Image 1 (tube, rainbow, N blue to C red):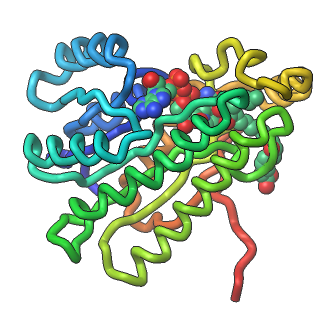
Image 2: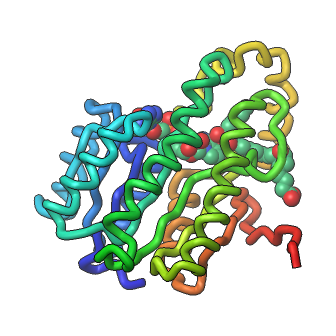
Length: 257
Ligand SMILES: NC(=O)C1=CN([C@@H]2O[C@H](COP(=O)(O)OP(=O)(O)OC[C@H]3O[C@@H](n4cnc5c(N)ncnc54)[C@H](O)[C@@H]3O)[C@@H](O)[C@H]2O)C=CC1
Ligand SMILES: CC/C=C\C[C@H](O)C(=O)/C=C/C=C/C=C\C=C\[C@@H](O)C/C=C\CCC(=O)O
């Protein structure tokens, strides 16, 4: 996929990995709609992006992925502004084992809400142009992080949902590819104040810290480069890409056949 002239929507775009995804998509010619709840950070980023890429290739819309209504309104505004949606990066996510229902609502249900809402605009069977969706899971979507069981569950859900949507799309002729990234630790604000975010499992922080020391820490740009690969390589559908500082690996799952 050539990105020039394409329209991308990125959730959780104001900071961290979402910001890096937004930047690499703009650098490669796409128009990008930034969705986030952090208006201050988003508007500051938008000002910088417009200085670099011009006034007409970006749009910020305040959108909480816990709200189907806000997601649908954001997608409608995107289509009205840029004519359609070609790329969707469901990236918004939190880590909060104390508020685990909120974690589920954002990390898993938010991805489902956004994916389903995008169908009417992207599905070739309903007048869409097709395209690609890349969801942000985690290595915790492939194996357990003992200090955050609910976060782990949400990310396992994102991996499974993405792979099922990829199969459904291929079988139905939607013309949409679905892929998922599974990064290890990334230097973002999500990692700040981790003890508080682990809630009743904060006594297990040291075990996670040991994982960090073994695996190292990625930069958001390294993760965004992998998203760019999954967006542009039109052979990729149903892929889970594990990303860590020493490299990356496409996961092979047990085959039912
Ligand atoms: N930082 C890490 O070590 C890793 C992060 N991830 C995942 O990467 C994604 C991005 O996280 P980071 O960039 O690390 O965190 P971050 O905290 O830097 O950025 C998350 C962004 O999502 C936004 N957001 C939060 N709740 C939202 C909601 N309800 N609706 C819309 N936007 C919302 C925040 O305002 C923020 O801009 C998350 O899904 C996270 O689970 C995956 C693996 C590793
Ligand atoms: C306390 C949580 C800290 C950060 C959360 C962050 O957002 C995140 O998602 C970081 C994940 C890092 C995970 C790193 C390693 C995970 C190891 C095990 O759970 C096994 C995982 C995958 C095995 C895959 C395989 O080898 O087949």
